[in-house]
Every structure is written in structure tokens, then in C-alpha cells.
Image 1: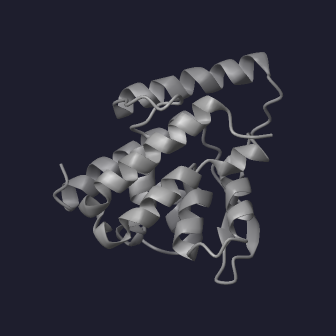
Image 2: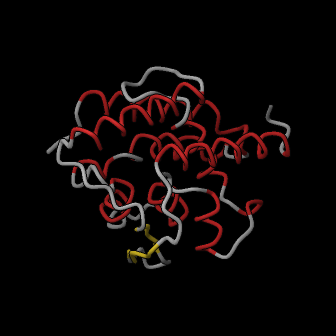
Length: 186
């Protein structure tokens, strides 16, 4: 299976957003890499639509992509709290690449259109509610996340708190607001 046109458009525009906003996150020197991270962030959908972040991390772990970038891709569907708990860090220590990916992913709609975060979250909730209600072969396991170690080995881990996509997105939104305030990005 290949990525459908909508997913490709979404990924392309996430890549553009990351490239354009890299400097705001102190990543100006890595803006080309940020473009690549944005372009590849949903590549796991080729293998597993239900846990595309994990699948993306597994697929890309064979490419030599930096561990920090792999973890951003593998964790972009989880909350800041889950990330911090897993890695034993504070929210201040979340890598800027992951923060930028969250920001980009919440500003680009499912077909690549630009959206405000509230609009994007409502769209996510609505789409996932329809998927859950009508099936479409969708079986999401919200308790599984991954960690990629320094050898790029993928380890699946259980996440204690069951969060829906909407709840995760709201937590990310709150984190982004505070992050931007602290770093004068508002």
C-alpha cells in the first residue's frame, strides 16, 4: 500500500511548515532535516494506519535518521506527559524537533489544508469518531507507544493513560501554548 493523495498532501504541507518555522524553534541549521521529518512523519501509514507513528519509527529506524528525529516521528501522536514520563525528562527538555512536529501537524489538515489548531482538533475528533462508529477496519491501541534507543532498536511500551486522539491533541495544544509563551514565540 502507498500513501493516499490526501496523506501525501498533508505530509508535504507539514514538511513546508517545519521548514518555514524551524528557526523559531532554534533549528535553522537543521531546516532541511526538519523538512524531511515533516515529509516522513506519517510514512508508517503505509504499513499500519492504526499505529502509524510506531510503524513509521520502525520503518525509518533502518535509514540512519538521527535518533531524535526518529523519536519525534514515533511519538508525534502521544502527549507531552507520556513522552516526558517515558524518557524521564521535564517538558522543558522535550526536543524542539518534536515540539515543531506537533505544531506543524496541528496546523495542517488531513488533506494538506492550513487550519487553526482548534479547527484541526475538532476535525480529528470528528473523523476518528466516524471511524470508530463505522469501523473501516480501524483498531487503534492507545496503550502502545515506542522508544527508539541509540542503536535504533524499536521497543514497544505500554502507556498507562488511555487518551483519545482528541485528548492527546488538547494536551499538545496546551503544551504548545505554554512552550511558545516561555520561548517568546507567540
